[in-house]
Image (cartoon, rainbow, N blue to C red; front, top):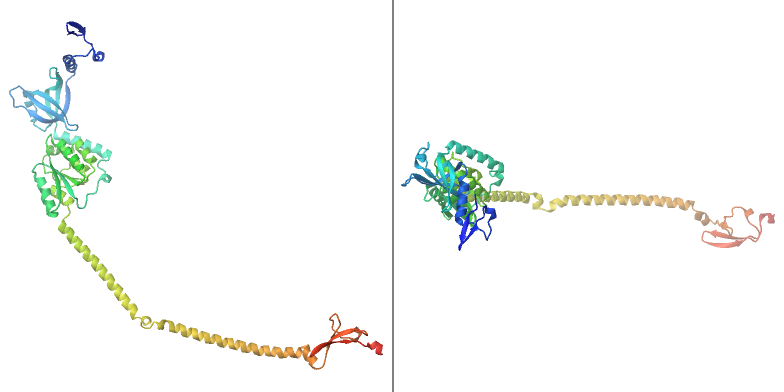
Length: 425
């Protein structure tokens, strides 16, 4: 293929052959880019794609039906055209909100720069297959821990404000409001009315959920709708919605369908209510019932205090009735008498010991006096000692002129030896 040429003020210049060769001074015109994109897309093979029909226009003068196909998980849409005969040839009637697979070839319209899918076959996805996909999604989310009990948040006892997501003027909304206000007339609600089935359900519920979750006054959010077919409840098993609920900081109560219905939103919610009425009763305490419980608890406390006081009064009366409390000296007197008796016995024993010791001392004194040299001295005897203190017991121990010391009964004196026996003989 030869490069294109363009004419600029009478001059002919070559256009870049590829997108990589374009520059600010050598750009492609819009028509060339659109043409090349159309050529590139036209080389694509037909492809099977899945999505949800959010708009179906088959009532027109054209031979084509126009469909808007959306991927609700990312809120992205594509336009699809299909011959009406092919649309009506589907084994299951095609309608808004249906989950379908389409066999189509992408096509770009260069003048408008719009992409369209030129479809030749369309099929609805059966309920069985959808339920199987939900079970697979449930398994994956369970493995991620989104349904774990430890992630559940505690509901407030008396919420200041309750967020309510429901259908417009729906019976489920009325059930929640009537039952909640019957239990607590002063309860406040922040209501968000959304589509509760069909292609707009998921984005509207997510938007309402995120808005209420960001409101600091809202302490709990109830998401509710009445019963319906399996297809009607499918949006509440959507992965994007389930993950949005898991990411919320505000406790969520799910009340979708009836007791037997269990969309994935029920599993990720902090509390699952079987009905809208049950959700209201779980979130809002019954004031009359709570007052009865409070009164009963107060009566039990009073009775317990009264019984305790009566036991203490009875015990105190019993203590006061004891003899020791009537006459406090009763407890001390026996001990005082015992102490006095012991004192007397001790005193008598001491006197006896002293008398016995005195008698013995007198005896010993008499004996000592009798054996004392002083008694002998009293009879006129004397104790003679030499100058060294030695007692003279033999005359041979003396010498003439020797000075001796004499001790008599009443005093002492010195004597001098005039002569010894040898000298006198």
